Image (tube, rainbow over the protein chains, first blue to last red):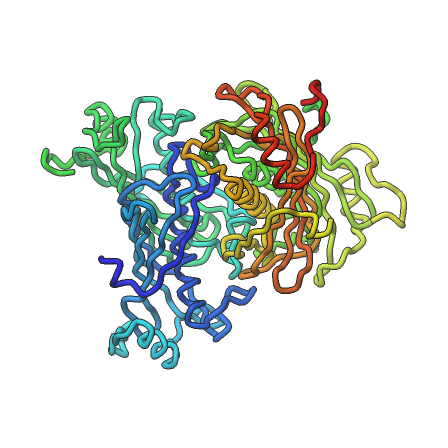
Length: 152
Length: 152
Length: 152
Length: 152
């Protein structure tokens, strides 16, 4: 995917504790960076996290699937660009696509996809509010809601 | 997948720092648990990690892809069973399939797949030694090497 | 301190993600190991953590002070012995002393002291129950309660 | 200590994976924040980390002691101000003092002290170069080198 396809950009700095025994960023830390990208994506829409882990607009999400391809290494003190977009929204779930690039070289470090489900206070899947769908579609400048009431 | 399909089992205890703001194990920590399972799987074959992150038999691996499905929540102090097996081996790569179950309830918490590539000291993909393939196939009690010299 | 002064021992294995850019265990991870030692110390007394982070006997603790001296390096795949004891108990607080040794060489890696305060559900300091004090003193085989009702 | 005594300020955002089972930032994560403060302090002087964990000016440091007092809780999505200064320099070691405050409320969350030793490539203590001492003293706008050649 081209970076121009993504709608949000933020940056992180690789820290000493992100590095593993082979001198590169340990693969699990990319999930931390992807999450930072998603939280900042939502902050940009005015959705902020409360201490309980729920967003201030009543949105509570849990990750149900992650796919990550590790394409090149990241090193200590690298400045990484985290590109984020929401690719689709279904009745109770939505999909983030993200890539991480080295800010200095432009080389893609990894790419990831995460499916999140909107849940209620009993952690059961719940229909995403129309206003949230509309706000995300407006931000993404395209219709991304898959109109199929049967789809999870 | 049934647990009987897996060839290695180890356990971990969920710690307070594994828990996130929603009171459940943060999704990234399952990658830590999967890695523990893989390291212990190799230890059982006599392959031990050196301080450099390379195995003592000369094997150096990097993760190139992860897929994780989060199926149910894990909580503080849970004892988790990590089931591991190697599903296939190609010329320079191999695939781990793993599931994590709650030891007490037997409920599956998550399942994951990880593709690892064998690399040389310059981090270029390198053909996996036949003796390693043989040892893994013996342990898995089946032929899992995909015989296609062109395949990565 | 001699290891014979300690009353509890447990072990941890150093993982790849515990290692930093200098190829040694990052200093912050010793706090994880010390915490594991404390949780297992309590488990040995029959005090187990609930998902809320509170012990099943009604004990809720927060760390108020840590002191750690890093004496030698720890490396990937090291087996570390975590020695733990409670050195004193005051009205609302108590003190853990711990050391970590390399299991194979016996070399001391680090030592730490942690002061924990017993709190109520509003996180205000609360007097530690006499039965808990008695059980800890019995386990430590000595009187460690500092009898001074004014002391925090 | 008053914030006016500190010479460097940077900020971090509390992330979901920093939170523990009690819904507050786990104590070990403050060591991550303190380290970020120290790395950024050095970056401000033109000292940048190389992938090996050594600074580009030849400085290699290891932490030998940490003291941390946890004064109030930090929560998910808090913006934290990390104040840093170097309080003293001896022949081969120097001391960082740091405090962390909640940016919004101004409440002090924790304070920490870290003693770092300058080491050579064999990890033996080595005299700190005079130019580094001078640059730090200039930045701190005061003489902080303890002139005692016998002191470590």
